[in-house]
Length: 266
Length: 257
Image (cartoon, rainbow over all chains, first blue to last red; front, side, top):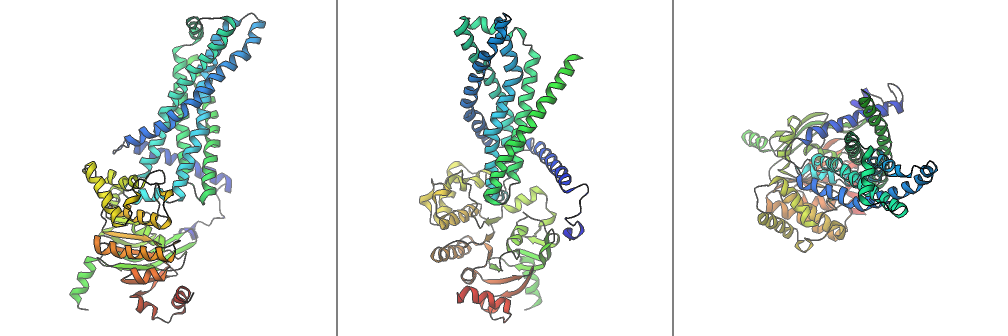
């Protein structure tokens, strides 16, 4: 029997390292299966749209509120430093660079990792421990396509859109503060804001948001799909979805920015 | 029994398990199980908790693969089927879970429509709704159409679970602990429903249980699973005429208590 051939107490490196590499292997397999299933019919269009609504529309108010406050507060806190050098006219450019190049994809992804990632982990985890996923399987429905592919696609599509909203509303928040202090017009503010922004900056932000969205969906689905041990397992799936997603988002942020800067330097 | 009858029976078998082994790490659950199920019969698999009863029906439905042995279901070798063939086979099998496994984010109607929408695309919306109402009526729960699983009692959830499996008109029904966690009156109702499903929908069934009252009232044949092997098969009376203390202790526990 398999158990007799591979005793549990014999590890190639160590228990933890073996476990780490085994989970990397499983993750790669999971992602590979996603790409295999995503192009194979039948397509679950209605479920994808439902998930887009869940991920996008239901997070929109939170994203907009956070964006407005971020823009407003960032402007308020930057003003004293800039006014020391008599450079308050640079405020729109500074805020635009900070929000559009860094904060919009990153903060949107972090909020969604908490709100959407935990939701996916808990929902799939709960379905797993109550045999609902197996019930789909025996009723000749592909649960991976219905549950996993639809959720990963939804986060990958909706997080860039939410990041776009974050950028717009964040700049509006900044404009409100600038207008209250300097009575700057709407047109003048946005003209100044976009002076230092290049089209390539948008590309990088969009790529970041897509990668973050894919990460949140994938991690949430993996954690939910492998949940065991009843309600404790569901809680653990929700928690680890958030923690792992955030950790990966920070790593991806550093990598993408490094690569983008290297490409620009060529 | 004449040889020709035996050959005919072998050809007609709905399920044929031969020398099936299954282990999880060092825990050997099935150790060469053999079982034949003929068309139209209800076979009850009795055994204590953890003896591999649920593993057995998961192997039959292709959710788990046997480590070795031959598993033939509705004329097909389950271990050799592609994913597509396995899905086609599953359309002919109904699986009633111990926990009912209803989709808790959907209403009863949506639960029942779910397999229909994906597997019977040629049906019109009206035909699908009629099919839902027919099976729900068959289990006596037509009034729960718009309710969520959380609003149903344990017995009602079991019935809806059975209705969901019946909607694809399966030839083979697999019941995993159909009366677990139910009061005696509801258990009796579920047992009657299993019999009704057999006669009305002409299904063949395997009923996994450790409840002897369920075994007695639903089974045409009883098979006792002990230590990963089918120890005894026959009618309820034949099986419990055996003086083996392991079988007798089962009987004593259920009926003496």
